[in-house]
View 1 (cartoon, helix red, strand yellow):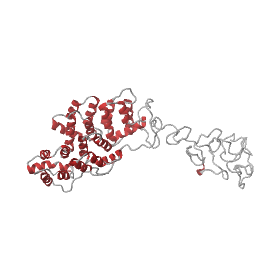
View 2 (spheres, one colour; view 1 turned 180 degrees about the vertical axis):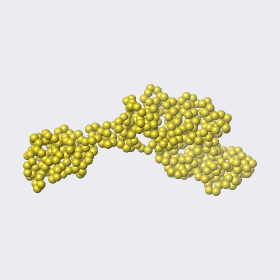
View 3 (cartoon, helix red, strand yellow; view 1 turned 90 degrees about the vertical axis):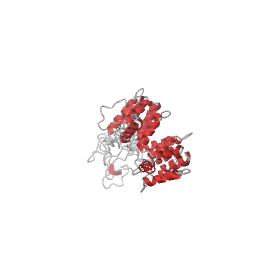
View 4 (cartoon, helix red, strand yellow; view 1 turned 120 degrees about the horizontal axis):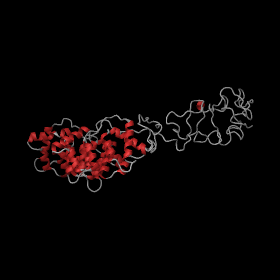
Length: 505
């Protein structure tokens, strides 16, 4: 028996409360739907049909296209079962209801609502289209700004003004999802490879050095073993102790006994970090040609206090301010970048204001990708003044906003020294150990070794983050830094570098 006039003309099916006959609806017969007490199993023609599921033609549910809807969820296909207010809860004794009493959504369908009702309110997060399959191909409407924030993301607080239609919407460039950590993973504890030697005595240590250099030949192994097992604060006092004990200059004696890269490495290890940085900046500026990469490396990776100390030492040692030296040896926007970094005045707060990060990302986009030409001064202002945690969030927001990494945007918008300088600043801020791992790799890559870079990084980072640099080197290049140094250097120079490296991974 078929059921003409389904769905009922007057209201939802079944109506709330007592069953009422509707014009064209189902006259309640014994054994019909909804079944009355005592009529189970139902009589022929009743609901549910006795012939099993799916029911025969003419029965309930409707013909092809009806219940259940196909994958993709609500709205159902043409001719389907349009849900009325009140939903499709099965009555006692009728067709078994889905768990929770609701209409069971198919894969990818509309999310289930409260028990007994068909969902008719928008989801709490993400707005209509937040779930895949709700009337929109490809997973619904784009998330983020402009519009509601994506699930798992913070709403954009106090974003000034109305959305700018010329700016791409957040989430429009890349798939949205939970915001990843803005900062690289931080390993706890001491991350250097050189530590204080227990019970080190400068007077005994200088005896070892004097004995190693006295007489015929030099005991390089004794020098390597001693300097390679002392921290910087234990090595630097050796110069004063040597002069006190022997009335001679330790540096002069070492220069007369040692040669080449091994000599340069030993002398670098006897300087304080800030004196060493100042001397490296001096060499980068006044040597044959300008070593722009060295200038960026030091100025982008040191703290405000370290940069301010370096500028004091530079003026005292060389009779000229670091800023004047930079200005006289560089030009254009690259000079402005270096001068800004050399002020040592970067914001060093650890807190991040998400709304400010979004604004800075918009400014960078407006200064580069959006316009013809590039406003390098806007990049300079943001990259040199903002805190490193803030900038990591800015880079993330930029990626979310326009689907492009900030480094690629810089490479597409700039050229020459200012391009390489800006990219180096971004890389150093994103992940400092990975930046130094790349610098070490380039120093040993190709014909010849850039020994000055290799020495500077191995000495300056051996008590800072050499363990992290080793991890990044292995991750990026598939072999340990120890192995790379062993294959690219030799002799006593190699032995002392490997002491600084601290071991293989």
